Length: 184
Image (cartoon, rainbow, N blue to C red; front, side, top):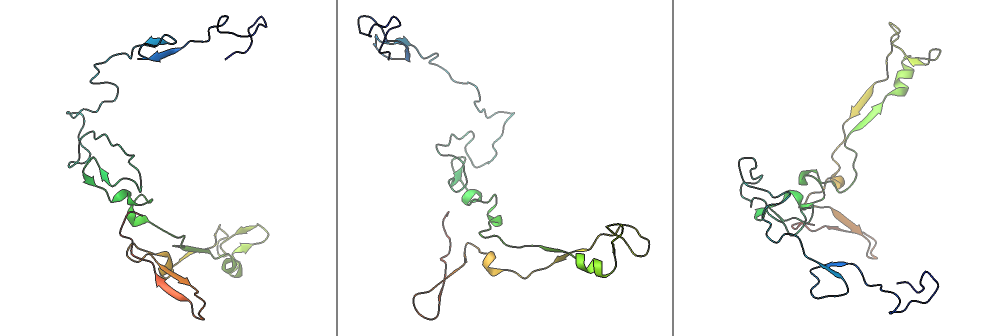
């Protein structure tokens, strides 16, 4: 609200009318303009989903065009389409079988650079790896090594891992985490 008029005089209720604006269905107000709310009988509009020849249910057991009152989201949704049990969205992974709780090395690739230099494939004058027989380009071998299964990096819902801690005794205590049976 203004405290001074354009000509410099102070604002008063007699000199300035600061009332204005509009309100939808404002009742009997005289301060604001009362505006009605468009159409009152609207059945189909914009993106109304219709069950017809052009659209089918994505889940046969569910309700067609179910209006969910909660978001369909990971770790939140327990049912889909009103009545279909949901187990896919129970964790943060796209698929529960792909859940990984810790970073693990699954494939180890080794570029055998030193072995290629020792075998004479590096041509110091050309600055390239070359095959000794026909002087064609020959890159060092990249080997894929297999690793043993890392039990600590492969938890499951039934065996999520172990906790090792000290209690003051000389030997640390080792406990298994409890089985995960819920959504978390």
